[in-house]
Image (tube, rainbow, N blue to C red; front, top):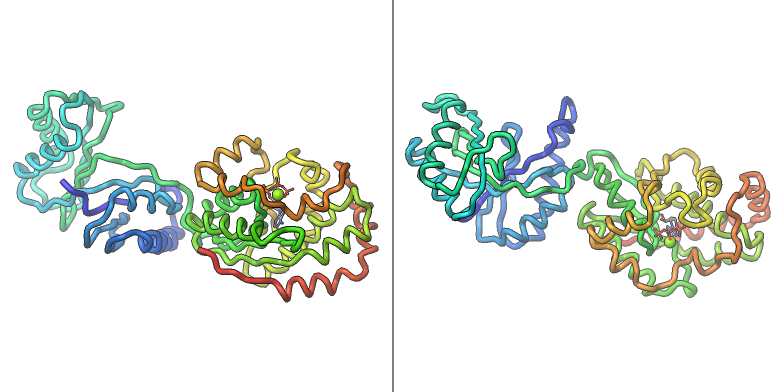
Length: 394
Ligand code: ATP
Ligand code: MG
């Protein structure tokens, strides 16, 4: 039997109360968008607490599943058979034919679950389960019932137009549909951590914009292309990302000439945060997002993070990988397929001007004193912001 439909299950907890409407509508919109990239003609419908994807043409089941596995908010994807109601005897035959096709002679355990939204069906849910179970056992001696921990559930849902049958549950990515939670500005470098950070915040329902600080000719076009590619990879989960590419060269050279070299990284990071916050506010973002993790490098000690953070006026800065080991971040990067791009060896603007012995315990007062020497930085920041390149990615 071919599947023509998928039942989409989402977290019941997330949709309690007033959120339900927005959550479901965003989820439908996100599913529609994800399926645009897949060959075939699909309709997505929401009916009484259920979302269905129906194929109106031939399609590749794996392509559909893979696309749906990138839509945050989906907990389970269930390939579904929609049966016409032709009486309970015919239903039994069809269920058995389906199970034979799916599970063949394999020795497995099952449990029948039944729900009924059509109340005039001649059998109640409590009657359907044992009758169906018995018919399956008779027809398929390789199967056994296990009501506590079965290998699969035979889900039978008696609905108004159709009877739904499904036994396969494919895990979705979980999370919250993108757009439910507002929008965040990701500081996206070419490294491993920031794409993972963006992915994690998008998973909580935020749309993303991103800012990349580029320092030509010290950082190459290929380094920039790598960041665009990373934004593209993250956008497969988050939806389109507007990427702001800020030319940071003049600012960086000025800091290099003016400030103590052991403070370069921290001062640069503070300027990046200020610029990112400004672009974030201009574009309706509610937070900044970075890939910082405590203790990973000198600029990410608690003291350094404190001084970096102090440069931000009032937006919260989310650092979702703050407590992850590098290896844990790498595991996520591999799973979301950003790792291979992140490890391409192009230079990063932070590493080019980096001091041999950067301060690891900076004091805000000391750093602020050094920054007072940057008398001309105001117009440079204005210019960098005004002349930034804006790319729509994804
Ligand atoms: P990543 O792997 O994300 O590059 P990292 O371990 O290299 O992180 P840093 O270079 O100290 O760490 O940067 C910390 C964070 O600062 C990054 O995760 C990113 O959010 C931001 N960042 C660093 N460099 C840039 C840049 N050139 N453009 C935009 N954001 C940057
Ligand atoms: Mg980096």
